[in-house]
Length: 424
Image (cartoon, rainbow, N blue to C red; front, side, top):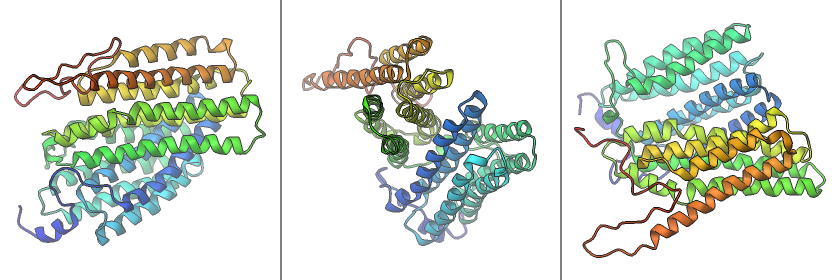
C-alpha cells in the first residue's frame, strides 16, 4: 500500500472478501432518479418518433447510462453506507434529477442546463474519488478517468453553448465517443500511462446485481406506461388486447433475462480471475443494448393501446419490432460475452422480427404488436424447455456431466468462457 493516509481511504472502501457484496438500500434509493430519467427518455422518443428524434434520444440515453454506470463502478469500490460517500451520492442524485428533468429540452433551450448537470455528475464524482484515493493504489486509475471526463466535459459544455442543432449534436456525439472508447484503450493518459482490466478489482457479484436492477428499472417503466395508458382510456376490446399484449411482452423479456441467464452470469463474473474485463464488456457496454430495447418497446406499448386499430407507420413498425429485436440481440451478445457462444434460438427470433417488420404494412398496430409478443414469448418458453432438459440429465459420480443441447440452442452455461485463459 502506498504511503499516505491509507487508513482514511480504507474506511471509505467496501470490505473485500468473497466477491458477494450486497447492494445497499441507499443504492436502491439512488436508482429512483434514473427511474425518472428512463421515463423521460421513453416519452421523448414517443414525441419525436423520427430518425433524428431516435438518434437524439439514443445519444441522451448513452449519457444517462454512463452517468449511472460510473456511479455503479464507484459504489462497487466505495461503501455507500459511509456518511461521506453517502453525501457524495446525494449530490450526484440532485444533479441527476436535474439532468433527467432537462432531457426533453436537451436539444433546445435546456441544453446548457442538461450538459452542466451531466458534467457535474461525471467530473464532480470523479474529483471526489481522486481526492480520496490520491495516495492509494486505486488513485492512478481514477486520475486517468478524470482526465478523459474533463476532455469530454469541454465538448459537452461547448456543444450546449452553440445554437445550431447539428453542431451541438456533433460535439455531443464526439464527447460520447471519447467517453465510451476510453475504457477500451485503458484511459491512456499523457504522463499517467494506461490502466488494464486487472487494475479494476471490482466485486463481480455486486456489478451483476446492480445491472440486473437497472433492467428491472427499465421493465418497471414499461409496466408503468402500460398501466397509465390503460387508466387514461375507456377499455374496449382493442385496448384490452393491447394491454394484455404489452404486459405479456414485458413478462417475456423478464423471463428471457432473469429465469436463468442473470444468475448464471453473476456466478461467472464472481468467479472470474479478471472480473474487470467481464464487467467492462458484458455489463458496462452490452446491458445498454437491452435497456434501449425495453425503452423502445415501451413506446410501442403506449402507441398500440392509444390506437390499437391504427395504421402501421414506419415509426410504429420500427419501435414495435425494433424494441424486442434490440433486447434479444443484446441478450445474445451478453451470453456470448459471459458464456462464449451465440444461441441459434435468438438468431431465429431476430429473423422472425425482421420478417414482421418487412410485412408490417399489411397489418394494423394491434396485430403487429401481438405478433412481436408471440416471438419473444416463444423464445422465453424455448429457454424454459432448454434449461429444464439440461437440469434433468443425471450425473454419474466420477464422470463429468454431459448435458444435451436441444436443437436450435447452443451451449449456454456449459460453453467455453469468452475470455481466453492467461497466456493464450
